[in-house]
Image (cartoon, rainbow, N blue to C red; front, side, top):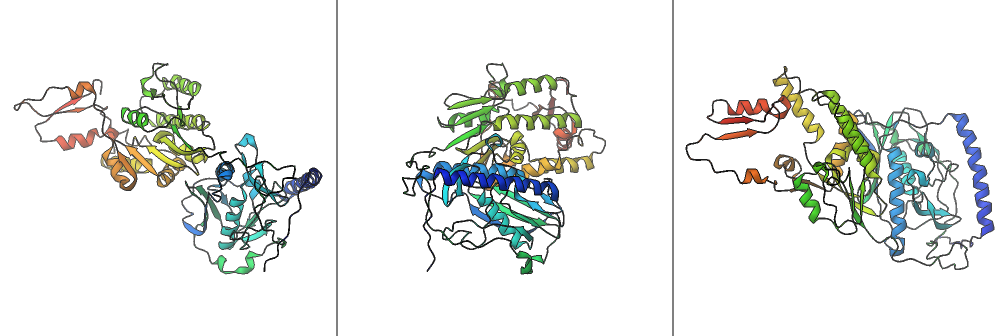
Length: 501
């Protein structure tokens, strides 16, 4: 029979002593860190880390108690912030990985909120609470990948059925209770939050047999007796505790969507107008109608709040006037503009946002920042994915090497990887493009094109008139002008070009 220990009820004195001891331990660890040279590791997409050596998949929503909904969302918010410091982290061989050195101290200024944290045997609300789910997963994949565990500490309380009960847990507390490991081979960490799970994995450049050697799994942790029971402040029953507060059943139950949007296509405008709820959030570059910018005139009625990036958008509009009409520099600046806009619009996301509708142009930057983790993602697709687009341009350039414009669009590999990863994890895609929809058949809504009145009212051609095709784009190679020319060669078809093409 498992040993059960009744945890003492904490009081203000015991908590003050705990905080004092913790502060001294934090100072001691800070001094040690300064001497041992432990440092942060860079984050970048590296195709050579192609082999998945170990992985962990754990549910985000681990407590269905209605009174815990707010803290569950808080935990997920904390996980997504920390994941942003860990995803794609590359650790060279024999170098030490430190959880706290990589993640940094959890604070409200960095986006952390209140979640559940174990302290003095109780599950209390605290900034950064819930990060132990991440440290647990990191410890497990480090074990399975054959890494040498340099420091690991078990939790002080065992919850039946948890990683703690299986002895595969690793608690962390800034900064003196850390998780540290190293590998004899270069490794890359990947930490991704889907809408429902936390995915943590270790990748190597080649498969390794290190995981077969259990001696590398040694731990410096001390064994602690198990303590059973929930001990959450709102439900533990110790009403004499100074932390006790009545349960708030409805706290944090509300879930809403956020629409983070860029250019306002008429097809997407109609969709947004009919698919949002009164509690939802709208975040757009600026109020298009107020500033006489039709390209940003999204429907804003019926949202709980509307956020804009007006100064950023106006400043970018001024800079765009000096951009060259074509060329690689123009493409690079436009991509940076999308990244800047994404950072501003992301500020509208609160922990209670469980679903995000996002324009494709800002999707890669939002994914890189980690703010989409733990949320359902719906993407308004306005062009081919960058990976597909650039491979298509490369193929066209081989056929038409004299075209100067087929080679001027080349995105940063990290941005391409981010878009590809985000689209893979997206729950749904929305587009009027049949070809794009065909690329993602199982999760796409194909919209009807919005036909301008001047075209829909055009007269029906007579039986004797020549068929006519209007080419509304410029006649640059990457616009498909060469392909259209070849397709029409030898046919009795009239081609109309846009003025100035």
